[in-house]
Image 1: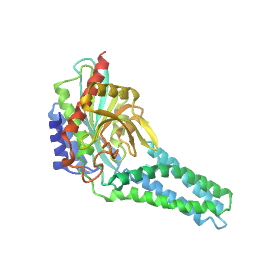
Image 2: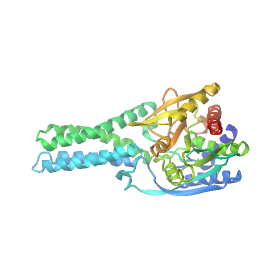
Image 3: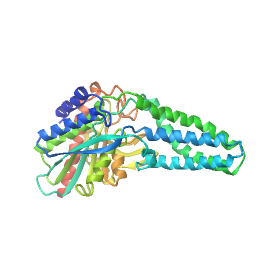
Image 4: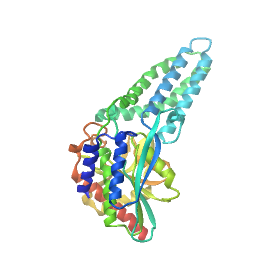
Length: 399
């Protein structure tokens, strides 16, 4: 499988280049997916949807609103309108905190309502089984690539970013408490504490505003590898159809700005076309120096877990194929389409590979995520593991 996948990766990276969410290059990548699937004889569906063009804007907006609340609280603190200023800060801070928590748990909220929206698309096809359909599996691989975000340029910055995310989440709640304290007391201490906390939100603004002024990466591992593997699986399923499992092969858009592609696909198809489906998320599966991993959970403040039955199946498949070296992993700091599928009530398992030392996908969101850092051996083991999971799911369906 990996030789075919490498050719697809090379096309994504060399011919198409960076594929930012909602950009013409992302659309061109979906054109390629559509042409490839049609060339294999599939009936291909292409569905447009609206999506923000940045995943960082909501967090930048939240940081800016908390800074505004601090400014109101401090400016009115020493005058006759101190209580009015404190009340305004309480209301603004509480609303921002609620929206921030909704955002990190992948739920709709006002932080996203006022941001620019552009058009993207998903391309997908259905690989029918040779016999009666008893199970449905959705395999996803997003085609878009990210920008060179400051937070991912080194392991140290990645650790700072993870710590900052947690601190900001806690600080939001604490700061609302400080605003309430200032509402009931003339003591200057709450204003002093609020002003000092402003430095934290200024730092958060640096991390959340910087990416949208940076160039897009070519994204060989993230995620030409996963998008290409979906196309290769489509070819293999034509030659070796499963017995009782229908496989939806979905190349999604706009994963890098909040997984809006998979969100749209689930809302359109989960109930009508793919009820009770299992989701396998292919993302970052070929990076040099990475382990082959299946993700137990993804944590941005609050853990989102993979489906326990799928985790148990992955454990059995890994034990049955020790040469593949598949290992469990706790993903901390960011998220993949796994989190979106789980948040929308679907049974999902993430297949993402991580560097065992840095705990990041290799060269994650950096200019170094190029063809020279793709490892064919890692890609081959990742694809074999995904194929073994599909076979095991099909065997369960036929039992």
